[in-house]
Length: 220
Image (cartoon, rainbow, N blue to C red; front, top):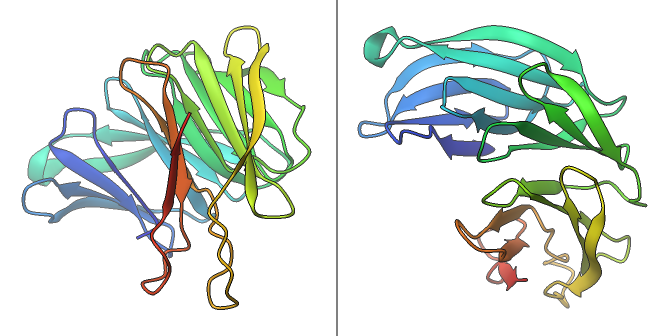
């Protein structure tokens, strides 16, 4: 499985695998309740409140909506709208906790912010030199953090912006854990999350190999 997240109510899990199949699992029994196969690569998933709609960032550059209908043994996944969001593969999607906006990252080095009600792009952030891997909204949706790796691979650019105006509030390069071995390339930053009630951002990552050093974590 390459992506996993809880449904907001906490009773179900959603996972995607390398075959681009998205499945809903019972949270207690881990049994599969429903599955849906995509014909494009699924790179990121996020729920829109209250948890009946799933957003998928795809390798085709689209933002796809999937509706979770029914419950228990009758649960099913139904395809919804799909919009072309970027001309290059999308890597990540996040939804602000108030359910107003979604943010997408892409190989074209742009970050786009979308209105979830009308599914239209409100603005793009075009100041990045390299593809942004991860974006995440703060607890109140007011701030958006964007993280991208530099070509050197030993530092990550962290950009924090005001969601509504796109004004940049913070931008700095932060070192990541160097690995001085051919067996352990520098660990990529592949996850970031804000504190549930404060402006504290944690980010980190790893290569996913069992013999690698412990994943690096930093708090900003």
